[in-house]
Length: 640
Image: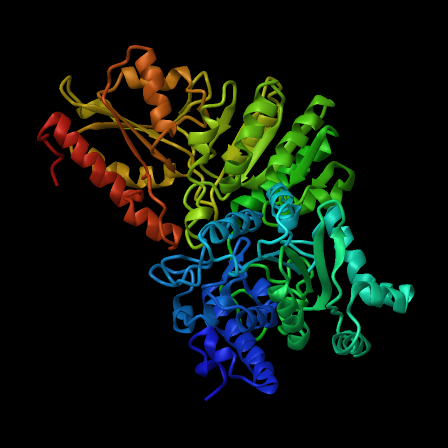
């Protein structure tokens, strides 16, 4: 039996010898490659924190000492060490382990959200709570990495953490130089300088007097110097990384040398007050396909061949690739187009634009708030910025979009990838809130393309709008089949289907279905079942869902029931927007809405969640049938 099979809790780690720990690290890496290649997940980040995770659980006592992972996609090793190894067969799958920390899974998991740069604020609050409740000896360990320190919340938290000289907050900077791609910005450059010039060099330059002044003579001093001599980039000498804040600093530490990491963490554990431990790690460590993945080091993968790292199965063209090509073409036509990413150029489709137009491409780090307000500045300067982010991260930049862009009517286009239900990444990555958030902004125009052709058309239309901000949103995954409209109304609303009126009578109810964006595919599949009830069905795609187009209201007034189908949250979504506009126009047609409920769903595939919440073709037909029956009673159906 291997070492890994003997680990059921962090306490088991403390019984292992140095040789056994090294073997354990190897077994964990093999286990991660085997399991994540079968399910998909964040492979590269977790391969990089194996030794760090082992050391933290040997030095600290979880859960009494709170270990908080920023974004927590690098918590797989933590899960393994806290008794959840068996759950990896269903990682990120319905009913299986979450890909992030999850309070329902284990007492060792303190948080759940996978949004970056929040760990230090959690840590600040927890340390204050421990102090108030009379347990100030408890440590709070915040693991910050993968570019999270480029986010503004980290700096707001640091400003507060530094005010206490007694609260035990250990900030572990997991420095792999990456987020999805190489980390940028002044702080990243500072860390790079520290990597290139360890504190050992400063000690050698300053001489023996420095050692005396720091009070670190004797055995521990020579231990540290010997470690440097052996190539272990670690030190027990605290120095001021941020003199203005007074934060103590330990490092750089070789994050793959267990002795060095444990040594630094024990010092940090015993230190009274907040302290930074700078750990240098390699993303994708120990797995050649990840180490050779120059672009992302296998930050996140689908199902792969564990030997080669190659994706399993064929991959159809996706929404992101269509947008990426459209953006490059727009950049060729217009030299005022600029693009902004928040540390995810590849996942949001901006890499090609950045390569072709490097002077018009800006990666601002994991800082969506700054990205949007910086875009407003670019627009004020006469350019048309395109800010491409995941839908879920628009939540973080709402104030900036509202007050810094829309208030002054700046032409900024926000492109939201992974809109609607995303699935396996869980509750905090589902992009179901963007309609509800963005639609309340005065003057904003929101496009919801139903397929790849519509995406190109509506993105280019957005670039022509100069009166204020625009949003173009699309889901995760492969493109659906193109749906050609039957007709186009004056204001751009497209009619996708209408029932032949030859068999209709004056008493035949007519149902208007407003299919928002990619939900048109599911709606069209449900139409035959609904028509079989003996009702007339008209399906429209509003294309631009906000503000509500006049023809949508005119059609609503001309039908007996309106059903809005959208992949946003039901509260404050497009259905609510249309209902509000209809009410203002004194239209009393009954209106119903099929949308995402007000819940935080567990991780599952997009298809599974659509099925659970009745948002697939079958669910749309079933819910529509119920409403039609309630409003119109039993209708004569078509003969078999």
